[in-house]
Length: 454
Image (tube, rainbow, N blue to C red):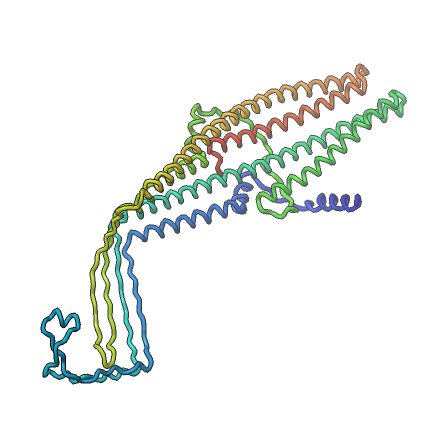
């Protein structure tokens, strides 16, 4: 099992050998936006809502429908009626009741109608135009347009999430790369010390104990370097996963210079967040949709008026009738009269749902305000952390230089020099962490106020 793990590790380390692809932060962002599935889904949602808007708009326009049919009846029985004298009645009322008093001299000759096979066709063309539907079509149209805007805000939200993930992966790669350089420098520093102590031990100037202390520290530094190299592989794989590259692709971050400037933040950053955050914009449109839904529901209980025209044609039926053409114009008015307060209860239900959306938006606004304030404070803390890390770094540089001079002058022992070098290594590592942390806090703050964009 250990051999398998070792082989896998060796493969991971060697897979990145060769010419590396250089990527800037901007290029990484672009690749991530092009690859991410959430962005593609968001784009499809925009297209879907665009189609919905166009679909609902067609309900304002006239509709034209054509239909036709062909009928065939096989071997219909003949119709025959025998001749007879017509009966008489004393009055019209008795005749209508079927009460007859006798037989007249009027003779009905009867008839015999031979039908056989009958076929004919008919066609119909209908034009309809809604005039007033209680405002239902208009409210539906407004809701679909708001749905389209929500999908656009959702696209912006997904983009900011992808950019945040990309920046985190990119700066993590930069951080590991800087720590790799630091680990290599620390190993060289300790290696030089071990060599000097080895020479001194060979000349019997120092003890074996002093040499072993440095060798132990060097071994630990080499192990830390090995761990950083492993982390470098993993951080590259993490960025490759975000930007859609093969996990074993060799990439190099080019934006390795971490420039830290404390930019002045506008005093109205909180108001910017409340005006720009996609989550609040989406909820705002959902509130508007819920209000339009009230109008849409009320429209079901208002008068509805529509007009139309139709043209029909029926072909000639052999032995029965000739062809006919019919042109008709109609108007249709529907007025709800009584529905057992159905309208009242249904509209009230929709109003309650609208109120829920408003309360949800208020709650989200409070949460976002808290998030923005926390991001602001963390950004300020990150800057102060850099300033303190710089002071510590300067002190560590001075300390290691003084201790090293004292060591070679015989005024400091090996332990003191090792401690000074370890303090220098920690101070340098903390400075790298503080700079990377500031970049991440800066990105998080921009996202919190809705300004993280490519």
